Picture 1 (cartoon, rainbow, N blue to C red):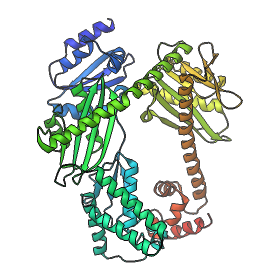
Picture 2 (tube, helix red, strand yellow; picture 1 turned 135 degrees about the vertical axis):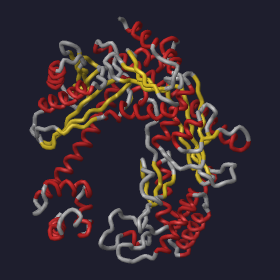
Picture 3 (cartoon, rainbow, N blue to C red; picture 1 turned 180 degrees about the horizontal axis):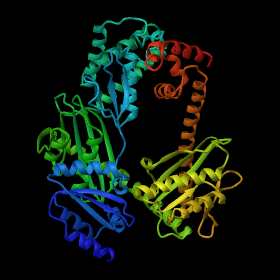
Picture 4 (cartoon, rainbow, N blue to C red; picture 1 turned 30 degrees about the vertical axis):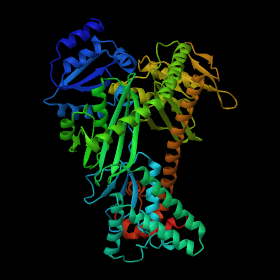
Amino acid sequence: MNNSELIDKLLSTVPHNPGCYLMKDKNGCIIYVGKSKNLKNRLSSYFKQSHTGKTMMLVRDIYEFEYILTNSEVESLLLELNLIKKYTPKYNILYKDDKSYPYIELTNDKYPRLLIVRNPNLKRGGNRKLFGPYPNVSAAKRVVEILNRLYPLRKCKNMPKKECLYYHIGECLGYCIHDIDDETIKEMKDEIVSFFNGNSEIIIDKLEKKMMEYSDKLQFEKALEYRENLDYIKITLEKQKVELDDNYDRDVIGYYEEDNYLSINILFIRGGKLLDKKSNIFPMIGDIQEEVNNYVSNFYDKHTTKVKEVMVPDIIDIEVMKETFGLNFMTPIKGTKKKILDLAFENAKNYYNEQISLIKTDEKKLNDSLMELSNLLGLEKVSHIEMFDNAHIFGAFNVSGMVVFIDGKKAPHLYRKFKITNDKNDDYGTMREVIYRRYFRVLKDNLEKPDLILVDGGVGQVNVAREVIDSLGMNIPVAGLKKDDKHSTSMLLGKYPLEEIPIDKTSYLFLLLTRMQDEVHRYTITYHKDIRSKGALTSILDNIDGIGEVRKKKILKKYKTVDKMKEASIEELKEIMPENIAIGFLDYLKSF
């Protein structure tokens, strides 16, 4: 039975029910997960209609599919989200916005702090105050910086034994040496919360007062700092004006679709003011309704936020969204709210017009580069590339890193780190171990195989990697990047038997391969530095009486660095070790 007959046979069994479907390639790997209220119609549309762009690429890679029936659309949505998390299919992940946006948190400690946090667990901490999300990280940091200058909150993570610099410059009340009354802390917290809820006059008055104080003291540099912060707040507030006369928190979502690309814009309105916006554009795989609903559901699955309402276009299934996320989704049809929804649409359209020519140019360059690479190596296609690099110091702290590029773009969620078991100066042994560990796992767990393995090394490393792949019975091409005596990439090593293939250093392919080399080197060296740092700490802890393997792991997990260990109090350390050992521990660290 050929592939077309298999697809027709599978389609004949699909009912007109809601559910999820899983597309698989010829190796049985799941490459796309979707949902539909009518599985029969949705699946048939893939194979009975003509497609372009990314949909065409998906359909080309589908060998078979399976489906799971559900009782409702809500069940389908939740199942789809869980399946995507479980399998991370490449066509679901690569072109969606998977960033986590920061929030500003006012901690619920006795002595609170103001922090930038990502992926907050909103169920933790009772009265925990979270504001955001902030797609503009710089704006979030600037707001925290201004508020920390104005309010003498606690700045240190762990309470030190004596006052720090912040206390001496008036930006901390010295919680470590003074007993601060609850009313003072409550007043600061209330004012900060009031600011985030839209009452900006409190902050403006404080900034103006500080500016005048320093000006009167002829400390004009300090006065200028506060003037710049004041201007920043006023300009930001001017940009945030919207026509709503309430102080509600709401999100407003608009979209624009053209030429099989989808542009999404989300306006974040907090305390009745436009706090920020987020725009994203990507090629579509499903139909427009499916893509917009998927984007919105993925966003609120990652960024749960307690807003008063979410204003969305009528293409969104608001009842399903309400039931799934417990938020008030609504579609305004007239009045001020409709104007703001139209504004989100205009933002999405403008973003499309600004970005589309650049995106299409970049995609053409990437496609041409990958086509050139596949031609040079004599391969049918090169879409999924896994690249390896090794790092060590005279054989010590031996590690490897693997980065993944799909369609010429980084796929960080697929990166992997490897701590090599043998600490000795053996580049070939390291390559043999890492390639075996990676692709034995691919075989064992039926993971997606790459179209090409690249090693950042010479003939010896390529041959070792090929030997391992052959021993595993896997038909995956292996190539290498050879450097010249100036440590610059000069040749591509590929084909069977192995050949040196020149690369035009003015070509986009050379730029792509160089970018991949830089990325795998950065990723591996970062891991190597981390391992080396932990190794140095481990060596220090090995010299302290009473610190065994269990306590060593607890200390490293909690404190990470020697400086943080030195800041620990006896009371804190007593949670890990007896008091006498804690005292000896701190005494020993004084010598570092």
